[in-house]
Length: 291
Picture (tube, rainbow, N blue to C red):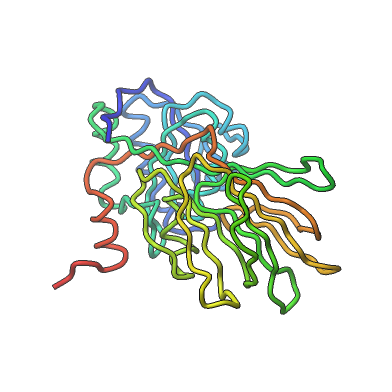
């Protein structure tokens, strides 16, 4: 864990839509940022609560040179923000306005001490790997995505098992019959993969987890592979349709014969915070270690 350097004065704010807590926080937050000499730009969801602050689309915020962004919401809002700011390398301060919040781990009562540490250059910086996903159809790449948590090949509207062949570095692994197949990063190991029985990986482990959901065979268990590998999923749906989901938010329909290639992304997500370890997060969120 490295120490974050002092930043020049430019901050973006992302908010969960229609979140009353964000509306209540914004006046004081804007006052604090202005008092400390920060220029502030906000996304459209935050704009109604941030009088006078320039409003940009989330994609425009992601492309702009910002020193850090503040996310007010839950993990869903964090994931959406992370995918758009990862390419610029902008660090994120995740403030938890939700219930669980593995990624938005800063409670509201610790926001201003955290901001003070960032302004002083003493905040800690965690770096999280992402997974890059490409979809090939009839020999041509038709889409590509970056995900912080996971890539999921799942059923469409039909109530039947998916059939997928999985290869790692070109070597056949198995044919899976399952509701879905998850390829998760270490960060995503505490998300959908965990609910499906996958292992928890520490964030700095250099690996992916391949987790089947409700597999037809009891011998199909979560598989951990190094993140220097390429994972290939061949979708076999017959005349039916499957669906590709990216962090549970973006995605596209999948057709019979489509191939999904997953490898480590060239981009990373940077998290700013002041205290606590990954195991503190597990203690708080999963109630581990309580006596």
